[in-house]
Length: 86
Length: 426
Image 1 (cartoon, one colour):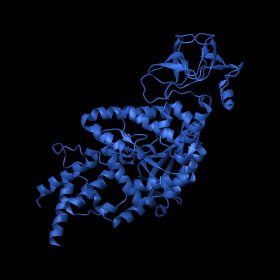
Image 2: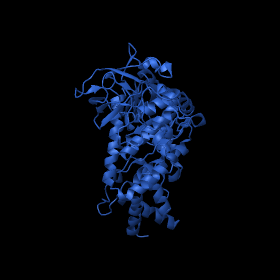
Image 3: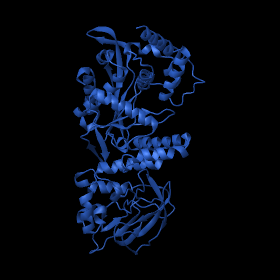
Image 4: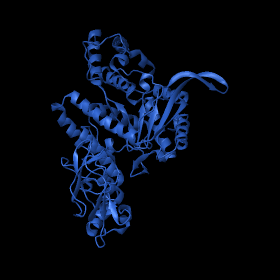
């Protein structure tokens, strides 16, 4: 899966949590919490949806590493790569 | 001056329809009173002769409860239920035209009532009616201008209780304001109505109606409820450490968020101070045995709802978490059940997501209390004589001072603190 594919699926997943999300104005390096008013319940639901979408179960300790779209893409790319190698 | 609607505080006599010396039957229109919303026909709830008019038309607005006229009750025309008579009759066998709820012309669901019900119904009807609705509930229904016969009862043999009436009133308020709840419809009704309304409805219009509903409830709360506010600092160190450990090995779908610990602790603490759990109805506090936590949920785009997590004190943390997730999802999608909208016995609000220190909330009428939580933040705290960084959270209680005093509220917050120091027992 390329990073562009991952990015597109991350944004699609996020729009399931934040229905009014506009991909055109989404800032990939700004925290989701700050730009989308995502609260802890939304964020947990986002992680659950990512798990369903990518099969990657983000441990609690790593949750902070997915604060922005860019960070999500990087984290998932690495996790998917490790899984392929394993 | 009768109270013609729950939000009326004063009115003006526009016209007298009876003259001194005229005979008056029950149901006769005696006067027309102007409220903020309409001109209302005031109907008599007793029989007699109009003795004296105390207030001329066109005078200034008079507070609810001001005597407007005296009606002489003749011997033989005494009300059937003498027990109620003393409350009605003024000195010299003349009764002031006391508050009587009245039907505004435009409202279809309104009964034509009087505030002194026992005297109004023929004995047979009164007996039959009494079997189905408690006297206090009926009185309240009339005050609220609800049709008691149409209410769903949850008491023994389907008897309508005061709580049913208050819930119906809340629902009616929401319906009137275009909110999501229905008081008496089945559990699918609210959802169906919302789903149906959505396509023809603009988001802006719904926002406006929600603001109106919130405005009505909050204004009523501040108008009627003498709030007292208490705050207490809780060391969340143990609870958060326990939560981190518990979540560590778990899949995302099985994790808890700390708000669930707060909800469970807040519900359990109500068992210890049950005076805070229930409703203020008919001039007195009615405790609820069940603890249904109304969870304040902010909606995207503005507004909030506070639907119930039923029996929050009895649920496991896992069940509460699932229920909470489901509730938030449906609240934000606009599809709540009527029981969730009408059942909360207390409200819990957490504004911890955005760094708020503490929240001093407005009680949701007719509830008795609101529990608020701020953000757990690392701050210096003294433990065993040492200053150490601890995650501190400010918990607050807004209480109805008619029902409880600060001392009971303090006991509640102390119980909450104690429960949160033993997270494994939650």
